[in-house]
Image 1 (cartoon, rainbow, N blue to C red):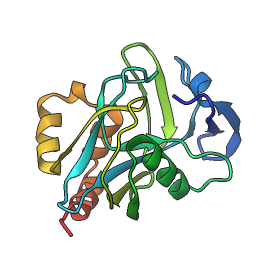
Image 2: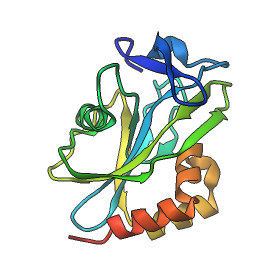
Image 3: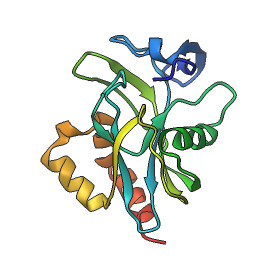
Image 4: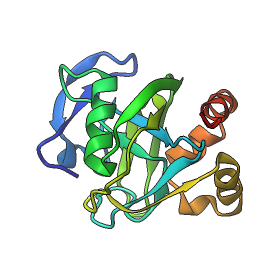
Length: 183
């Protein structure tokens, strides 16, 4: 995790309480904070599945949806999505669309690090060739949503809990399916 970024701390109603440096915030007692999750699609309707770098503090080496991150103060969620997609996978985007705006979750990884986020979920289309930032993403592959669903059903432990929760939310799944239709 970048030590230069912060998380925006919030209460259960989403009201801002302050900020905390991102790396320090993620611990065994991570406070509730704002985040986002973005599913990227190519022109063939395939989604980008990424594997988190082994140096990540939370869920290292785990497969997840395309890009996740934290908005910074005075930054919209859309601006944060654009910034993190460029930083993590070198993606230029179009059609940034909410697919599960009310998503939130609290989960612990095997080391005890907790994610505790109000985390709206978006989909977007990638308009260029990708360049992975190996400090963030160790591996990536394009695949159909159907193949992803089969993989998650067969081995859910290989995937981030937020990916599994988002994929299994019927309204989000339907929006992702519509978004995945090839251009």
